[in-house]
Amino acid sequence: MSVLSFFTWCENGSLGEAIRVSKWLFPVIESFHLLGLAVIGGAVLVVNLRLLGFGIERQPVAQLWRDTRPFLLGSLTVMLASGLLLFTSEATKLYYHGAFWLKMSSLLLSILFTFTVVRRVALADPRRVGPFRSRAVAFISIVLWSLVGIGGRWIGFS
Amino acid sequence: MLGFCQWLGNTPWSVALHESILAYPVVESVHVLTLCLFLGLVVMLDLRLLGVTMLKTPVSEVMGRLAPWTIAGFAVMAITGSLLFYAIPVKTYLNIFFRLKVLFLLLAGANTAVFHRMTSNNMSEWDQDPVPPLRARLAGGLSLVLWAGIVVAGRMIAYNWFDKEI
Image (cartoon, rainbow over all chains, first blue to last red; front, side, top):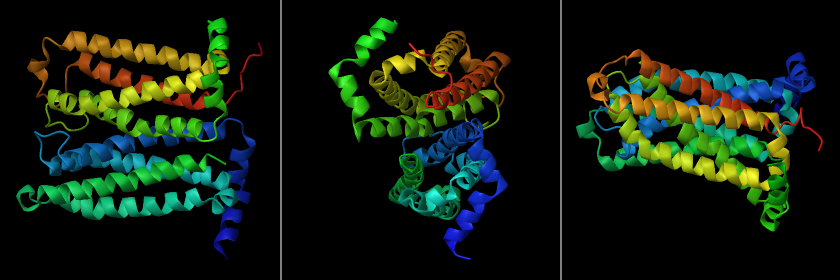
């Protein structure tokens, strides 16, 4: 089964059909996707601004990582679930849309980067992580997550 | 007000922005993506006020260190939002979701003003508390609800289900 035929299969399912037919469902799911966007932005920024040296100071990065992690995971779950629903309603269109593939690849990279590199830097002994490395990691992380958002917004234009 | 919107919509720059191929989508994208910066950090502060995250960090630290980013984010939101209204004033003014959004924005503004007024004197008493007093939790919870309403109403402006004909 090719990727395209898988996408077409998703779109022809009853779920995708229901979302397409309904006037309300797509905007409502989109709204959840946007609310998740705000929370994920906050959770990512609290840790990364701190790593950049512009955020909350009187708290170890490790503590901020642990404090924001449930909200990162929670918002990521909402984003993936609502995103999947939006996907099923227009999967074939997305297959031919460059922005969709940009979004998916940067999403994969963002998740991998956050839960390996960012996590390790956040939990490491701050005396052993130089400010340059912290800042570089935070910068890359913010760029990767921004690409996900830009790709997502771009999907809407066409 | 409708007359003003009609006049505004006929100004050359409003027409140009509305009909532009690039500028309008760019302004709209900046408006949506700044949500991460502005609302993301507001949500984290509200969650701190509710006593559900960063319990070991003083409220003043969360508020103070994030404030420059929230203020900058709000400025971007206000500017891009005004431009979006400026591009399509009449239709937006008549849109029920736009009116709801403005109402929620005013309420969110009032909530923030009341919170700052009530807490400016005695915040040092509970600054370090993991769970702040009830009035602070109320302010945080109300802010979350109102901003969620603002986001949803904002999204719905694009869907003109209830548009009135002039």
